[in-house]
Length: 188
Image (tube, rainbow, N blue to C red; front, top):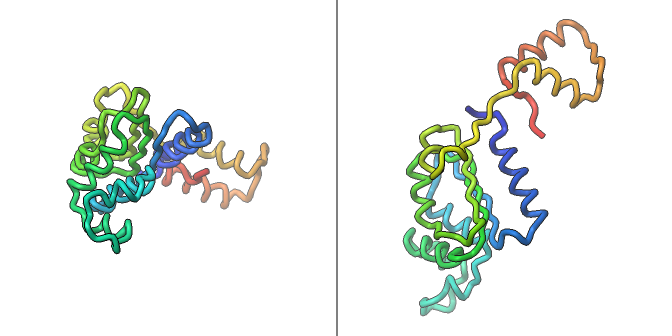
């Protein structure tokens, strides 16, 4: 389900890993979404994993074209080969956020070579079939659930840093209804 913190959790893991650094040679975080374009996603990966211009222009006779023009002229299979070639035998961390279709995952997965031991791919999705398809071992599927209304209320109180929070009863009633409807009204 939406709004339970999947993206936030993946971002925290990605950011912490990027801060620690050194372990992953090539980190990338890509928002996929419902209306994805595989070519655009592959180009985003290429940009984030810092593929050198020489690797992109390899075999191109027209030296007047810049990197963006070259990438836009390529078809999906050429882009896949660039990603695969760059990540092959390297340790990478890729986060694919908000994947809605198994087809999107399958199109991205083709571009992923067997990485160096320790490479990781994180996929966030609200679709169970996508989670199952993208995870070779089902024990690595982590389901994020909305907070209960009492935990949501406690979080709300902590955010406002008032241990004995008191407010007008009509406002408290409104806040509690909002928390119940939204599940988790606040993001960090």
